[in-house]
Amino acid sequence: MRLPFTIAAHDRKLIPDGRFTGAMPWVMAIMIFLTLLAAAAALVLAHAASKGGTELSRQATAQILDDDPGARQYQQNRVATQLEKMPGVASADVVPDEEARALLEPWLGQAASDADIPVPALIDIEFVTTPSRERLAAMQRELSRIAPTIRIDGNAGWLQPWFGLMRSLLLLAGGIVLLLLLATAATVALAVRGALNTHRSTIEIMHMMGSTDLQAARLFQRRVALDALFGGVVGLMGAAVILLLLQERFATLEPGLLAGAAMPLYGWLLLLLIPAAVTTLSMAMARWTVLSTLKKML
Amino acid sequence: MQSVAEFDNVGLRYGTGAETLTDVSFRLFPGSFYFLTGASGAGKTSLLKLLYLAHRPSRGVIRMFGEDLVNMPRARLPGFRRRIGVVFQDFRLVPHLTAFDNIALPLRIAGISERDLEGPVNEMLAWIGLTERADARPATLSGGEQQRVAIARAVIGRPEILVADEPTGNVDPDMALRLLKLFAALNRLGTTVIVATHDIHLLQEIEGAQMMRLDKGRLSDPTGSLKHPPRPLVLRN
Image (cartoon, rainbow over all chains, first blue to last red; front, side, top):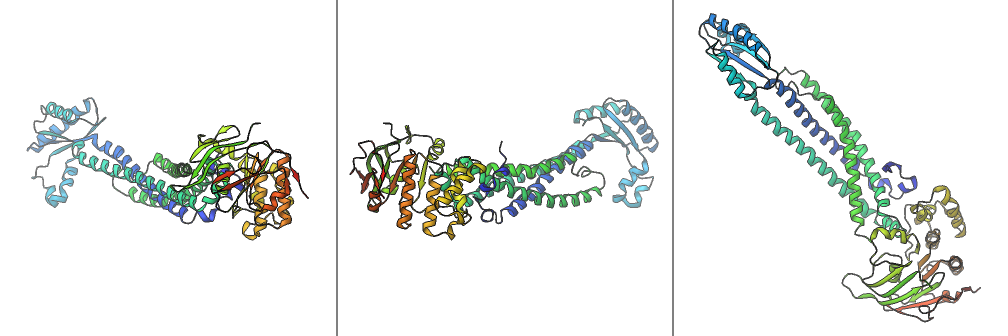
């Protein structure tokens, strides 16, 4: 296969660089920069949704609401022991009373530490896989024999709107990537058509001398490939700086819903492929534009 | 004798206008030399365009090198065009290429290596007296020099048919004669030459050349060239 960069020096002279390029490499750089940012957003969201979301949705909280503090603590320990024996449960950690009260401090202030205020006894449960609602209900029924006031709430339930939002944002980011790729392809088509008009007489002369459409297309493909490569390098450098800065910011966040919101290694590798993909797309578009335009000539 | 080009009731119309060429029928034989004459607007350039495959006819049949060109797929045309050399009336040199590169263009398109084309192109430059101007671009060449480059470009690939549209229009009489001798030399090597001109002096320079005349898009046959095989050429001096 002949690479677009390997055409002979004399063939390159047929389409002088200065007349074709102009703002094109910079337009490509901007398009690739925006495509990279949108793709990075999609990758980070996908990673966060699969990592952070999955971790959280495997967790549930059991609360025992008995009024008697002694009975509450007794039941809490027994339930925790029982939970650890249950299949599919990775761990069941008793939340100390002080910690539970500390959780209420933002709402109750100092009163949260008042022993007279009944605070539910909490157990953090981590499952091997995300438990279904039915599974949690069955567990609650079983454990109510030990603690009649027990209530088990899975994180998956309240995470649903979060997952929905993540999915919407992911689709939006993916859509923006697609739109940017379409816009890039359209930009290439317009630029190549303009260049074809500028060099129409040269192409006609080449045709009259027996040049094939592919010979002409190769000249434009090479030019577009060089512009896209330049744009790719500039766009990638710009996007990398922004993404590294954002990554630094995310790293300082407390663990939680956005804990996984960092670019995974495979994400960086995929981002590196985008300039190459845009270059390939641009070349294919240039080739298609030239061939479809020349088809109208004899 | 097998003809290299055969037109049968060919008509050509641009858009919805009147026919530029009407019922044109003739055969060109290998190794023959033809002059195509006619007043301005008679259709000479249109006829040549059909010959060098820049247009397809609106009607009729054109066969070249034994094949029907009217229904030939586009993808096969480049191969045929490489067998035809063309000297355009307006030269049509590539403005940003040097004289050397313009002359080398058909060879490069045909895939000839740089090593193999350098000798022939330099020889051609020497023949047209432009060795010193090999690196000059068309804009810096005079009209006559441009025309010589255009002719050199048309003949460098040793085409089977050479089509020339007013090839001597911008050169002095001596150069015109030299160019005609080049065409005759190519013709003796087997190239079929067809020269469109309204310079009647040129017609007298080559004995044995046959004449076709176009009048308002219709072809007449003053020398019987369309009916009889060609006679051997003799250059007058």
